[in-house]
Each structure stands twice: as structure tokens, then as C-alpha cells.
Image 1: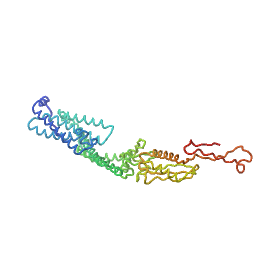
Image 2 (image 1 turned 90 degrees about the vertical axis):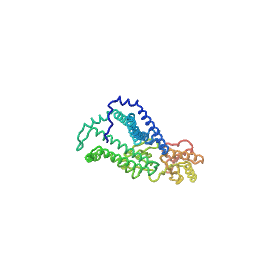
Image 3 (image 1 turned 180 degrees about the vertical axis):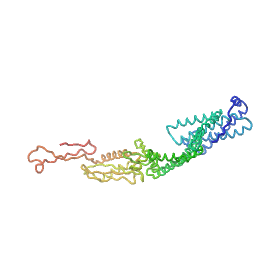
Image 4 (image 1 turned 90 degrees about the horizontal axis):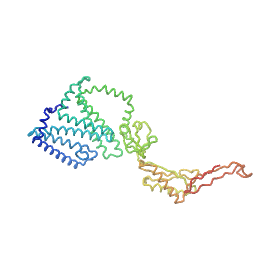
Length: 457
């Protein structure tokens, strides 16, 4: 990092007096011209490229609140300062240039963090901290206090292995690492936006895996470059790497297993974003696949955060892995004297009247069993959107079946039971061998009547 700094302001009154000179007006006019030119260029570029205002780091929402406007204004200000110094001494630019540098640092840090970590709770405090530090550094630079503080911090040193470190070197290293990581996050956010644009179905999970891998690789390389730029010998980190490996082998093995399982899921595409899955008793749609966990959203709105290791080691039902179609069925009983062909036609009609039921393959009504009370029919049908719920569709089909049966006089039988009455009886009455005669409880009314009738001995 360059340590060249401007000369401190020894006579603050003399420096302030330069603002009353005609040359200061020339600098202010040049600054106003730079602001207008930067605004026109940014507005023209925004109209030409028409970026998404919510996701644009360069342009922001209004054009001037992005990174491009202060960066372009800073470049123009440097050029204007070089021209005006030919005629007038520096006065306005001594304040404007550090302020613009601080503004560029704030905009880049804030915009990149917003794009990389959307909705994070710690994001707002970090943004305020970056803003305060940048403005304090700008004020210290303008007043000439910053070179004095850095010189004093450079005197506080200690030896780490074969490297001589100071407080100033440590601060510069932290700033360098932060700058490199912000650039890495910026590049990875751009790669992620590019990869996930218009991605659907099978390609979405693969692109998500590539995006996560690119972000991790860029952050690792950026951190190594930052440490090397400070002067820290990277070979000394081999001991730290061994300690981290031992920690992963013991205390962090579950965490490491979750991260590895996340990449396995994304690369193998055994589960993709948008798939309908069932884990134990929880069923829902895969909303997002993170590096450590997977978010499964149920139809009721509940979200389950499942560690990726569970999705690898346990049995998971993927209802839409190779085919999004799901088969459903409902069972209904009719009286033994019912018209079988009519019943099958009415059942299939009730299913076809629902728009979510697929026509190919179409619904099928089959005589599945001879029940104790009547003929049992099973109506099977296919749907292609199980994420929209299944109980509501089954209820709608059952209600339509009930309406059609009532319209066509198809009887839904009540339970029938044979009762053997034990007790006193007239001599000679009863069944063979003197046994009481069986009595059959009369069936209940036809479909559409009250509840089932029960006979008790």
C-alpha cells in the first residue's frame, strides 16, 4: 500500500483564506462541471443498458446512488485538479478528492454487501461502521492528522516468526483483506446473477453449485493475496492448516459433512430447487439449497431447515425427480345392484372436470374389491403440480362424485351387519338345531340420507 500522503496543513487560517480567492471560484466551477458531466454520462449509460434497479451495483436505484457516479466523478475531479493547478493553488480539491474517495469506498462496500448478503440482520450495522470509518479517515486526511497517527502506529512493532509486524502493518493488512474480499464478493455476485438468470429446472441446481464454488474459491484466493501483500509468510499457515484439519476431524466433522453433502446434492442433482420431496412426515417443495442446509417449504407455508447430511444419509422421497407427475386416488363404495359402467363413467367424469387432473394419462376408475357392504371402486388420476396441494383437489373430486351419484340415483350403501340374537325364544322357533335365527339389520336409506344406522344386540 502506498504511504505517500499530502503535506499537513500547518496554517489552517491561511488555507481557509484561499477559499476567498478568485481561484477557488474556478475550482468550484470545475467541480460543478464535473458533477454535471458525470450525471449525464451515468444517466446515458443507465438508459442504454437498462439495468435492474434493485440488483444493480453500478447504477443503484436512481443512478447517482450507485458506484459508477462517485467513481466517474472522482476520475473527472482528478483530471480537473490537474488542469486547474496550472493557474490557481489547490484549495477546494484538497477537500473534494478525499471526500470522493471516502464516498467511493462507502458505495462499493455497501452495495457489494447488499448484493452478496441480502436481508442479513448484521448488514445495517456493518454498513454504518464502514461509512463512519471512511468519513473519519477522510477528515483525518484533510486535516493532516492521518500521517501523524500512521507514523506513531508504525513505531509499535513485534516479531511474528521471521516477519516484523507493526500496528500500522496490521491495520493496512486488514484493510487490504477487506478490500480484496469485497472485490471477490462483487465478482462472485456478478457470476451468480449471470448464472442464475433465466435458470429453471435441472440447470438451476447445477448453476447454484457453480456459483457457490466460485464464491468460495474467489474469497480464498483473495484472502491469500491480501495476506501475501501485507508481507505475511504463507508457509507459516501450514501449522494453522493442520490445526484446522484436526478440528474438522473432531469437533467440526458434522459441519464439514453438511458442506460436503450440500455440494454432492447440487452436483448429483438428486434434489433440485422446485422438487416436491417428503422427509419422514414432512412434505414440501425444495425452496433453496445452501452450502450447509436445504430449505423445504410445505404447502401450508411452514419451512423446514434440513441439514444436508440428513438428505444424504436418510431416505428421502422425491416426488418429481424424473417426472413431475404424481398419482392420487380416492376410494368409494356403491350398492351391489348399481350399474358398474355408469359408476365408472361418473367417477372419471368427476376427475376430468378438475383442471389440475391430467388428460394424458387420463383418470381411471376400476372395481378394486368386493366389500362387505358394497362394491368398492378406486379412482386414480395424475397431477403435475403437487406443490399446489393435494387435499383440496381430492376434496373437490369427492364432492363432485357425491353430486353426480345423487343426480343419477347411485346408492352409497350403509354398513350392514348380521346379528345373532341369543336368549329366550318360543320352542320350535329358531334356526336349525334349535339355534336362534339370524336377523339381518335392514340397510339404511339410499345415498343422500342421514348417517349410518347401527344395531346393537
